[in-house]
Amino acid sequence: MSKTSISLIHHLIKGFPFEQYGFAALEKPYSLNQYKNWLEKNFHGTMKYLETHLEEKEFPQRLQTRAHSAIVVTRNYYPFPKDSKNNLFPNLQIALYAKGEDYHHWLMQELNQLCKILKQHFPEEEFIPFVDSAPVLERDLAYRAGLGWIGKNSCLIHSKIGSLFFIAEIYTSLNLTSFTSPHPDRCGTCTRCIDACPTQAIQSDRTLDARRCISYLTIESKDIPEDELKPLMGKWFYGCDICQTVCPWNLKHHSLESPTFDRQSLILELTQILSSSNKKLMLQLKNSPLNRARGFGLKRNALLVIQNIPLFELKHEVEKLVNDDRLGALATDVLQTLNSQTSS
Image (cartoon, rainbow, N blue to C red):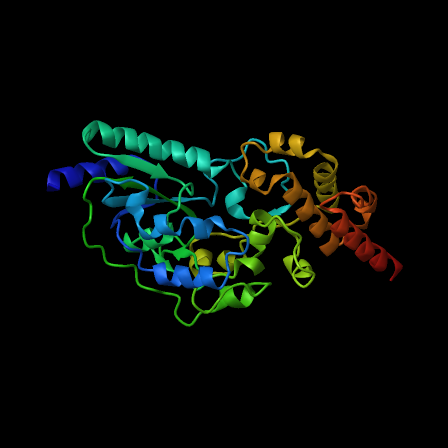
């Protein structure tokens, strides 16, 4: 491409609220072998789609046959740029990225707008946006675009902004492959993320055993956690930020305050979750990332929070679920904990 065209693309992207952007060639991902080993160890748990979509990650042109490059962008989510209008559960311990509106929607809107503008200037070219919506090894692309390094917690980290950001990309037929120096790895000898993980999910090769990760257990998993893991999940209702909020690169750039909870307000919120129908919960959370866990997952998570605090005041609400087909065994287990704590 001509220097004029490249300059135009830079100018157009800078008109959007992305904190970072860069370009990467769509070629074999540098981390592909590590990813395959991760799958072979079954560290992806029940997320079988990660196996099914392996070929699309290895051969990006399967998603867009004319694609040569990726425009990779990042968008900070702390403080959240799109506060949720239906933040029903402010007292529950929720991952920072999930406290606002569902990023799949508003970030995709921003990318679609950028694609539309790029198409106007380059009508013969293709621009296909992805926001966590396609089989893309996005951290790999972001690393090759110079937007950070892969930290020991497996997150992409940048020395100037930390890691509290979303990654999104546009596959394009434009040839934007220019040499970009990788961001230097600045984890050093630090092991704060590894040491702080309650479930010891972080592996030595900068991957996660998702089967032990609180985020997986409260969002992606459709099962009840193993007894060993339940107490280690603490008060986390949806997702987990620990490996990021202890990272020196986030502490350097963000004022991360420990959440405080009002017991009575927490009881009201958990009562609402347990007493609402699954359909009602999904309607209330239609613009929130929390709807990914579905009604079953949210009620399962609520029971675990009640058990781990513990909240004796919700014993009656828990009793109502003892005969539930999917939650009955967990509700019974929670009641045993509440009863044993009360008697002691």
